[in-house]
Length: 383
Image (cartoon, rainbow, N blue to C red):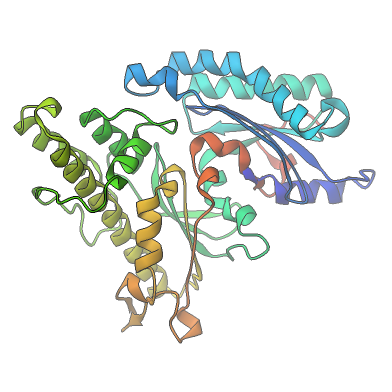
């Protein structure tokens, strides 16, 4: 959520002439998995960032249990807020100028914990309050992390997470056009499902991260061949990951289940799935760039954000292959020719936030980019 407060902080600071210091916001996150509280100011300083991981309580269920998650938020939110204030050395009444919270999307019961905590604090302390859209925070994270050279509008955002897969054209701080979305499940959910099918032990970042790390182990191994994964919706600005996850599921079932598959075959399947999923993203990104080019939309930056953007394989593949992108006959031909072209009119920049600011559990660090704190639908009072 950090990247969603700064510009709003600056505007509020300018409007409040009596304010002699930076505008500082306490942000709460409770959308699905981890309890988070962060404190940032209008000068883009991260003064505190507390993330209380809750994956260990969800692993026995094979995914996030909404009721258990809600109980965990109720238990952990007071501690997260207190810890953030202690880290920053702040008094909440004296040093905090506004309260922000994740308003969605997310699990309704979980979201209500952060919302009610924020509303209670705002009411008791007579502070302004703002709800932040989860996906907008992800999309605008690089406005914080790439400072002082942030992406310039308009830019493309490939937003990949456990709950969403979107290709967005970001036109301004508050204007986004959806170019592509998933027709079934998100890429993050597919990673989680395939990880579960392979009986991989969760890491502290969950089952999808476990699959990524499993794929990265022993890169020089000679692995058995795996039947090719399908290529869904080729040439269409739409995502679809259910067929990839189903392909892996059918392969495992034909082998008699996960217990009947040796470690090398498991690793081969995991790597083949990961490669197919990332290649699917890549094809849609190419289509999105061509879509913008044909319409003379001057895209110069490509942002990849969301929890799955912390995946090292995805990052390395795009950094390696997203070089020398070139337009021929008004079409983008290859991701291998994007950054070093001699034609400055077609030069593109690939932007990844730091991995620790990609995950949904770090969403409490992305609030600075929402343009006007007091224009939020969830603002209920004036300070």
